[in-house]
Amino acid sequence: MIELRNLTKSFRTPAGRKVLFRDVNAIFPEGKNIGILGRNGAGKSTLLKLMGGIDYPDSGAVITDQRISWPMGLSGGFQGSMTGRENAAFICGIHGIWGAEKRKVLDRVQEFAEIGSYFDAPVKTYSSGMRSRLAFGLSISVDFDYYLVDEVMSVGDAHFKHKCEQVIAEKRKTSNFIIVAHSMATLKKNCDVGIYLGPSGLQIFDTVQEAIDLYQAGVPKPAQGTPAQPASKV
Amino acid sequence: MHPTIQRSPWRIQRDVIHALLIREMKTRFGKWRLGYAWVLLEPAMHIMVLATIFSLLGREFYPGIPTLLFMLGGIAPFIFFSSSFGKGVAAVESNRGLFNYRQLRPFDAVLSRVLLEFAIYVFSLVTLLGILAWFGVVAEFNDFLLLVVVNLLFFGFCFGVSLTMCVVGTKFPEASKFAPMIVRPLYFISGVFFSLEQVPQEYHGYLSWNPLLHMIELTREGLFASYHGMFANLPYLATSSLAMLAFGLLVYRSQWRDLVRSQ
Image 1 (cartoon, rainbow over the protein chains, first blue to last red):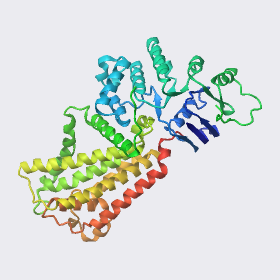
Image 2 (cartoon, chains in turn green, blue):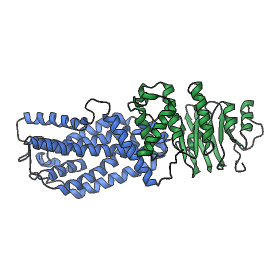
Image 3 (cartoon, each protein chain N blue to C red):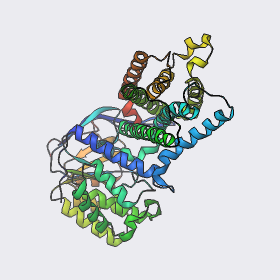
Image 4 (cartoon, rainbow over the protein chains, first blue to last red):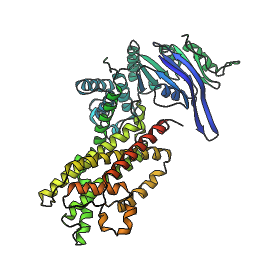
């Protein structure tokens, strides 16, 4: 279960505070995959990070007993002068994976990322595609209840994309996903619940299709009194 | 696939610090020729330069203690202090990417860095003493227990300073410009290359407010039997260290979300 309680988040801009959403209350029961849509700058990634416990709201809280991943495919935590293997070992370490278990994970990452001997070269020598492959391989090698996906499906070549989709389909059997994407096909295929971040704030729908319709209509529904609806029914 | 089991908070903390220590070691020394030898070379060069200058002045610095050892006893702790200070200021900015992992917060970055600095300090101090002894530069050893106590307190002091600077340096990035301006004068008033006895009486009252001075005096007293840390005051060091540690923890606790939060 992931509960959003009185969640408020705003950003400082030169023209004053921009409120992304205010006093959002919602409960996402276990077993629901969540899709987040909205226009650029609407706060999709921020919401994802708030739910993942990486960023913090101005007020309110995200309450959960689930293990939530870091944003999948994220390569910002890599240290350029360390090799892919050392970086991967570090991530294993902070997740409590050591020794033989760690070696198994490293082998799997190397295999998945298909970077061959580059695995033992400093990460700064990687191409951006190689970086994301390594990052993605790492994300799926550590087990979580919820995986956060922030537009990773758009990186890499066709072959890699296909592989990612396969892995996500496999993972969905045991875990849930919270996905930010602009590809409606991805959202439709992977998500149950939809969150739309629009001009009137944050709206939650029981099916992702409703959120997609609203997003594609490009306008907020008229006469929407409260910006957020509780999703506890889903 | 394979499960990450639910870990206790203590276990998570330990895993994170362990992984960070390995990472720090790799990034700090892995890229250079001679690698880990720099753990020793850095303070050694520093000490040798200063010691040479003072030896060239041609006077015995402190009766009964070779100048080299005298300097070593002051410089090694001071390097630990100043790097804790500097690492704290930069801890958040240089680790931004790492805070994408929710179990890793600035506290861990600061703690692992101070731990590593402390290990380097102790290791280099012991090794350099050993090397100098090999070449016949020795002074009679005094009190091991005192050294242990003093250094534990010193660790707490530096950790407190580092946590405080982590918050200050992130909230006010300009602080990184001022940091050297604070540390450098401390170098001259902390007894790194003098003993309080060698300073005119009327300044004692002012200088002895500085906990670093007590730290260095007490280290020398622990190391050398013929050193009289007349003004060194262990209770004062203990009080100021614990106060500094408490202050650092409080400041961090009240501000930590702001350090990571997007604004």
